[in-house]
Image 1 (cartoon, rainbow, N blue to C red):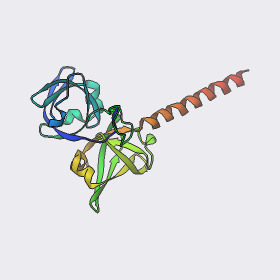
Image 2 (image 1 turned 90 degrees about the vertical axis):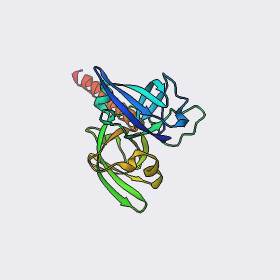
Image 3 (image 1 turned 180 degrees about the vertical axis):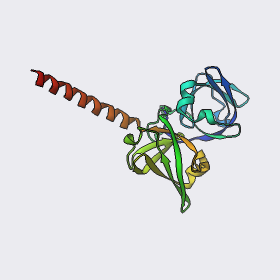
Image 4 (image 1 turned 60 degrees about the vertical axis):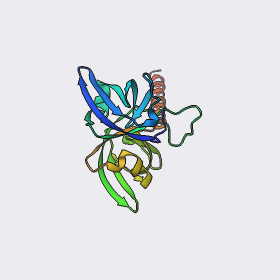
Length: 210
């Protein structure tokens, strides 16, 4: 479990194509030197498992599903990525519940300066807008953000100078892809409501037959 509070940025060293996916080589900062094989790390909002650590470079295996559902397969050497270690039992919960299970890839459609910050609009992947609410939460490239507005399949977020400086969102331009993870609580609520409607329909159908 993560919170969407990015700790640092890493740098892509290489992305090796493999028959069943890819292997990501990522240079991590010194404060991540305690990483060990088997541990988890959120990379641009994607929960990955460390398979090896060699001279400050962490290696991760990317499954075909990860490549289909996220932007990680589009990374290139030198690209920056957002990093967050899992929430510890004694840690502070500063963002929102982020699983690192990306729902799809959105597209930045607008980046407008507002004072020292930026107003950013993102076109959401099909079917996800229903889980995004104004003043609710959304994770973009692993960054926990408050939704400023929602219209049709687009949402907007207001990025403060700190977020622009310490995450990759400060480097995003219109047309750039971003990983999107909607609020898990919204997904569970929608699922429960679907179940309630399904149950009610079955009961009514049975009553009519009787």
